[in-house]
Length: 219
Ligand code: GSH
Image (cartoon, rainbow, N blue to C red; front, side, top):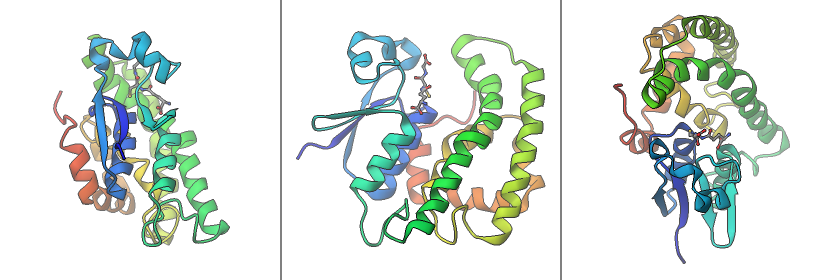
């Protein structure tokens, strides 16, 4: 059977989310490079895979998916085993609901707070040669500090966000946190010792190490 395909670039945050899930479950996959720095994501060929002209896209036989969080869940369901169920769907509806809650928290609270800092400090300067908008950065850091306070309280009660086992809810935080740590504001995490330890634990995972070796840390 031919391996599943990821269309994208390993430097991309949203591609990295998908690659991390594939690495965590040990799936065989092919990364088909779509060089977004060269504009290949806007080609008619890629727009057939992702109608919004974004990376990643994903293919498993006849099935073509886009939206990294949805692709990630498909992967975790497809390769789920009794010992490896990162959506906690076989543990019961309460356990899987906690994964859902903290997965939504990433999308609705964490991402909107952290991503502007990554965009302003790294992505816009590198991709567009744009200057950093410090007002946006400062407002986002304030917002992120508030979000991290909630995470600190949560991680005082459980080892991981959704409970005592690692889940997709945790892994989902990897891409933007990874690049945030390359901005001048990484020390914000020092104010939140439980969050810092949680992040360091994620970074120590072999699958995370395999994905981030293709992601730059200096810009
Ligand atoms: N919500 C989408 C997902 O999670 O897959 C976002 C996809 C996205 O914005 N991808 C970026 C992209 O394609 C790369 S990380 N950027 C190129 C552009 O917007 O022109």
